[in-house]
Length: 73
Image (tube, rainbow, N blue to C red):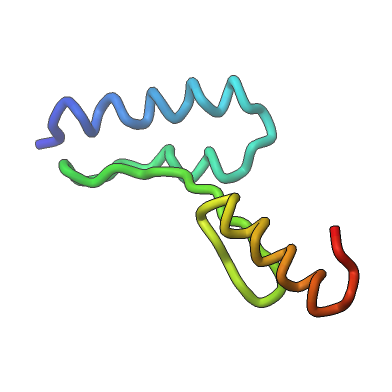
């Protein structure tokens, strides 16, 4: 028997999809998740072969890469 949190999750995802029409990743939220499992969107910054979750770290890596090339920015 589904619990209340499983019944509300798809409705919330549907509302988000209507607000963000054409946002394909939001469609993934329309599935029922088991109790205690929460879907969270995250932002990742890629600089060369490296991936960062912190913008300051990504910017620091970009500066390091530019310094090595002799292109100070």
